[in-house]
Image (cartoon, rainbow, N blue to C red; front, side, top):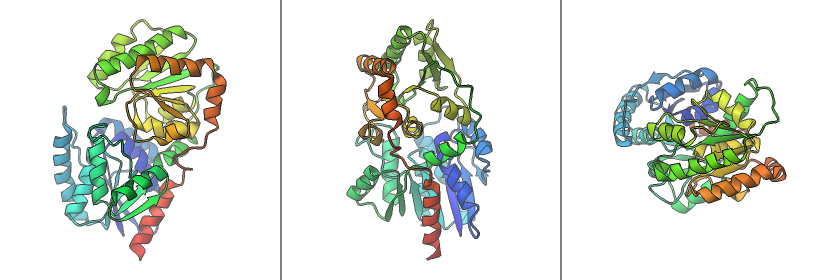
Length: 361
């Protein structure tokens, strides 16, 4: 049996890596890994770290690319590969343009599609954009829906998607545990570290300016706390961050970190301020509280269990909540003891077993 896995962004590679490693060890299973190169520079080191090699590198990334332009190019290029390889199924992950292109390419070749991380919804088709639309469309095309949480299962059942729905957890936990076991930990320090990740397109402009301004205020109030911000290369983010944090001595603006080093920084963090979807999934593995600088989240499980709080980009709320955690270590310790809502690190094996069994029947 032959499985085609499609990826192209940093989160996708992280989340398919352990599945690829599991499937390739199963006798009789051939795995074709197709990289669209949507985030070309960011994914090459991940292939090395996880010891996986793309069978195809489509190198589709272009300067200033638009979601629709990438989607069109990816569909055409993926169709050529599927026509040549004739896999038994296509596996896509998440909600990127690459994932939608993979699902559409499989659909047009009448090859069944497996969707990892199915069932995430905010209910707002334009937030996040284009991810909310992408994952909703993939839900109509997939044969297997691998949901990370019961909430995602409920969404898929309500939408009456075709195919079968499986509650398996999130593969990001598998990758985090594997990486944490292998990455060299930096020497422990008593200094509190606050991790900042902010780059969402819908926050560009005044919203991000307000959020980062609030963080700058907090940093000035807590000069003994170290604030670390791996800044996205997008000019909308980069220029604003350097302007807002200019002269704030305890805020470190650094280049985006390689995945292993980012995992180590996360597990050493006291608190996370973020608008990133991925960090919302990753922080619970290490019991790190989250202040979520978004108006909505498709990962509301972190809010339900008490690990995260949704504050939007409201400066007052950001300052209040950050101060609450920095002043009350006991509140932070409560969160550290909350079970991970995204699984126990066996998701990739569950998915692999289900797909192999489906092809053996």
